[in-house]
Each structure stands twice: as structure tokens, then as C-alpha cells.
Image (cartoon, rainbow, N blue to C red):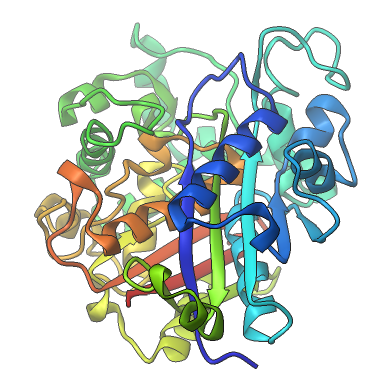
Length: 427
């Protein structure tokens, strides 16, 4: 068993609407970037974990996605594990690559995730008539217990409307309100936001502060899908998706790929040139949701802090799963960065800005960096590794020593179906 596991190479292509790229080509790009970053060759990789959620639905490429994507880029014969864990797929792949080294099976592994969600025309396997977005938003329902969701979705819609009738009436009169197809998860997040607002006095403006922060951070990230600034007012004036969430408060889908190469301490000692820019994985946790009354984020965070011997106050920078701006507020509380119910004032105080007490989502997060599902968790690892190395340019946090990544996927019960937390440390 290996005591320590390190990140020695990362790769990340620009996220966005990459109509001219394929799963295979994007996978090849991020793989080559990670290899270049680590000064390694493909033959040095002993095993790989490939994450993707939508290739089967969009192009009928089920079952052997990793073997197909990686062999097209001359990485084959080795152990290749396919990972599909909703929005937590990328971080789950990282956990798998870490676990194998920790167990002593390998000394150098690859975690790589790629997602393609935009097509010029309907790809093979897509529902007839779908254009632009592969499989349509209906595909997001697969991140839930479909049978239960289909049985209750009409009830959920009724609760949403009744629970905030005034907002619905006001938004229906607003010319900015648009009826657009959106993921069912936006309705889940909106309901959570309204409950938080009612219980703790959180305001829509406080939620908008998060979105503006992340959009402004992304202007300093050339790999982000969105690189334009946003004011709090602009966020609030955008059209309502599901009250209180406006479009600017919701993460976009997109195309992209990201990768990380990990190694054992023995491998690091044998390759001295890797030491200076290596990053130590202090904790890697994967937990699953439950239909019982449960808080998966608390469970995962407690396990990660116990494994690393650290506490919330030790974290210098974090990347969290901000599928919506409210999600970031909720996670900020659940991770212990501030007391429960105080996320709104905490964020409004500037505590999560780049120069704040605990900078959150310096990359722009899912809200602005983008959310190609299979790549998002590994994009977090890329950002935090870059921050710990001191190589983040204009968005660089001042001298970070410890970083945390939080990445959730799907819904089971009242929380995520899968959730990963990784804690990284400057070596």
C-alpha cells in the first residue's frame, strides 16, 4: 500500500460549444496537455479511468467509451475503466485512479473526462428532431431515480408554483421571463433556494453576488466557456429560469475535456524532475446518497477532513459544484466555511472573493467555466493544482497551501446521488 499519492500532470481544453470537435479529438487534446505538463509519455501510463455521461445517449457509444476514445489517441492495451456517475463522473474517475495507486496496484495512472453536448446536426442515436443539444434536456432526468421522478414530477411542478405563487405571478408579467427548456435539477435547486430564503432570510441579491463573482473570475480564465463580466444587477435582471434563479445563476452545458495524471511516492522519487510541481492528494472521498433523512455533503466532508487531518478553517481555496449560484451558497455552509443559515451575509461580505477569507471557484466554477458533465470534476482538479503551483495568473490566490474540490452528481432522496471531495496540498 502506498502512503502518498500525487498529482503530477494536468490538462484542460477550453470549454464551450466546440461544434468542430469530437469526443475522440477532445480526449486527445487534454491527454496531450497532461502528458506535456508532466513531461511523461503515453507508455508511462499504467492504467486509466475515463469519465463520460452522455456519449451513449447522443451517439449510441455505450459500454466501451474509454477504450474507444483513448485507443483513437494511441493509448490502449492498459487497464481502462469506464466511469459514469452523473455530474460527479470526473471526480469519481480521479478517485479511482487515486485508489489504485493507494492500493499499490500501479505507480502512474490517468483520470480523464470528456463530454460533448453540442452538435451541428442530430448525432446517431439521438431522438429524432434534436438539434444543437444532444439528447435534449430530458437526458438530465437520468441523473435521478427515473421511475420515482416520473411519478412525482407533476407534483413537484405544482409545489413549485404554489410555494411561490407571488413570484410566479410577478414573473409572468415580466417581459424578461422566458419559457425555456431546462434541466429538472434547476427546479430542485430553486425549491431549495426558496426554502433557504424563507428559513434564514437569504435574499435573491445574495445569490446573485455569487453568480457575479464567478462570472468575473472567469474573465481571468482563458479556458472558461464564458469570459465576460457580470454585475449583480445584470445577474438579477436576466430572465427567470425557476424563481429565484435567473439564467446567469445557472450553469451552462458545454463541450470539453480535462485530465490528471497521478503517481506514487516511489514513482516521484524515481522521477526527480516531477517533484517541484507535484501536488499531494491529502484526501479522496466518494460517497453515495440515500433515501433516508441524510446529509451526504456532511458525511463526505467529515470523512475528507478526517482522512487529511484538517478542518474547514485550514482550506485556502475551494472549487465547489455550483450548478446554480444557490448550490454554491448551500455548499459553503455544508462544508463548514460559515455557519448554517449565514451563507448569504458571508458571501455578500466578500469572504469568497479571490482576496477573501476562503476564495471559492476562482476558475469561474460551473456557472462560467462551464459544465461538460464528464469533465467538470477534473477541471476542478486542474484549477486547484494550478493554484497550488502558483501558476493561475491574474486569478491566482495569495500563497495557497491547502485546496478542496467538491463535486456532486445526480439526486437520490434530498441530496446528491454521488459526491466526491478531494483535498489537495502544496508539496
